[in-house]
Image (cartoon, rainbow, N blue to C red; front, side, top):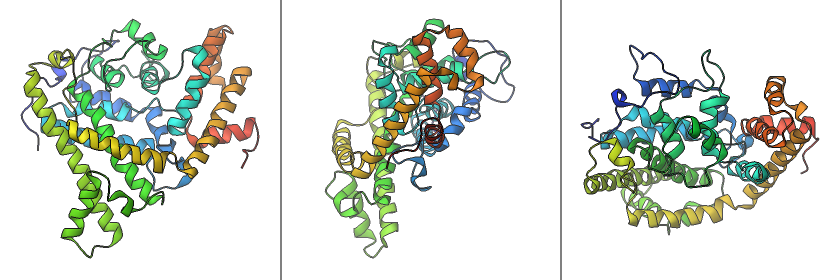
Length: 386
């Protein structure tokens, strides 16, 4: 059910244009075109084989960056509908928000960031901007996807204003096309950020149970989750374990979504925003969890951190992933000619400068899937240790 459009919603007719002007489509809004370009990008397809928590080859059942991004987009559309916001813009931001992730999830990002510290570091949000503004090279008239300012702003700032020092990959583009990094993003981008939180809190519990890292009984003492299981048990006392888990987790999902909607409605009334400009300059997020639910989520995240992200099997995968990223980065940096031929023009433009070469290596390595990075390590360096 779509509610009446809020006065502070983003509207296609007032979008702030593209870096390279284009004629408008006769049958799609500018935000629909943004979404479609993201879906058709090479970087989006590669998310299919990039880790969320478990390595891509661990099992077909676990979430990948692609399935996670689709879940985030679905949640974001639901919340936007209830708040009267533009669901097309929020979907575009949601689908693009993880494009800059390295192989092997946050482990890969942490490793690459450490390796890139002498050259400006690595940040996946900034890399997403680099991908959609430069590294996707399919169109005749420009590099990148030529997304609207509103979409680019949402990708760059969906987690809030970008504080100094601004990652180089974002600073480079911002110097050409000011994204107003010091303000909040649109309400639609804020919805995408909270939808990310909702999706991963829900599916990390699901995947952790599936992987046997903890049992349902251990969740009963957690806030929100425990209450959801007790509600299911009271209503369906003889339910089989798989259905019991599904019913409880979908209730948990619903609690998070409903809290964001009710809290954000109240915050919108407090801010009294009459335009998207007012949202950007409100000085605080409009879309948020209630303080009580946010406190409960911190308890849940602490449990997942201890029992899932630091589980021995996951830690072993992290060590293996770090070894691959470090080995490939050092190998390509020492011998950049190992990069594919299509990257050699960029290397020539770098004129042998170590800084530029490192950033080219980072671009190439961060775009790899888990599977391809593993294969390249074994091809160029040798077998992985057990």
